[in-house]
Image (cartoon, rainbow, N blue to C red; front, side, top):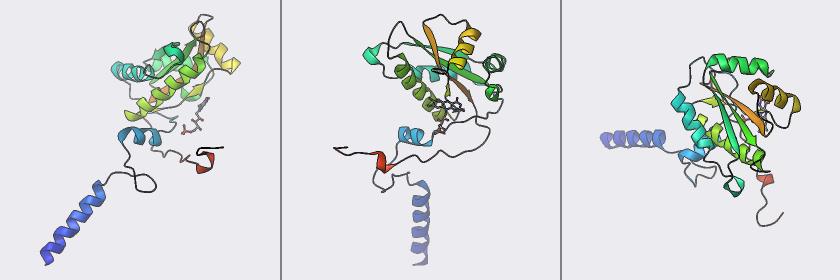
Amino acid sequence: MKRIAFYFICAATFWGCSSPVKDNNGQIEYNETIKTILERRSVRAYTPEAIPPDTLDLIVKAAMAAPTGLDKRPWEFIVLDNKDDVYKYFQATGNERFETAPAAIIVCGNTDISDLWYIDCSCAAQNLLLAAHSMGLGAVFTAGFPIKGRMDAITEHFKLPENIVPLCAIPIGHPELDGKPKNKYDKSKIHINAW
Ligand SMILES: Cc1cc2nc3c(=O)[nH]c(=O)nc-3n(C[C@H](O)[C@H](O)[C@H](O)COP(=O)(O)O)c2cc1C
């Protein structure tokens, strides 16, 4: 009898430790994508560890998988893959807070290709943030457009052509600190079948 009780306790403990995360009502199991989305948070402090070019390339690939109006893909990505270029960039554009990040990606829109460029590029930026998080990296969206001073500084730094507008700069690195995502779920914002 004692042996059965022992096995029962072991099994219950194992089940408790390995049971998957579920939604609030315990009905739907979270898959990896939902976990990535719910666990992402803005990360603004990074360790000095460099980000390999392949990793940055995969992050941009995820960004380019985003939906765009009429599938026009009106984006350009400036990838800063080393601390020196990142430092120079954030110094020049007045966002010194991020100057020690090991990498950064500037998401730009081509206004000649689509009037919806800022929406398309925002979708790409969100994919980028999620991809980074899914790989254990931290990142944060920092606005360029429509803040004139920031846009001018970025345009000047890279000598961007007139039709290329910087939407945002995203520093990327290994998070320096642990942190928790905010819980933003708000039922009062949901309108089922009517306003
Ligand atoms: C359009 C936009 C502009 C933002 N600009 C900045 C910025 O300039 N600097 C910054 O530190 N964070 C910026 N953020 C990040 C937000 O502050 C952050 O997403 C928000 O506080 C929610 O926190 P979370 O990302 O951890 O969920 C921006 C985010 C968005 C979507």
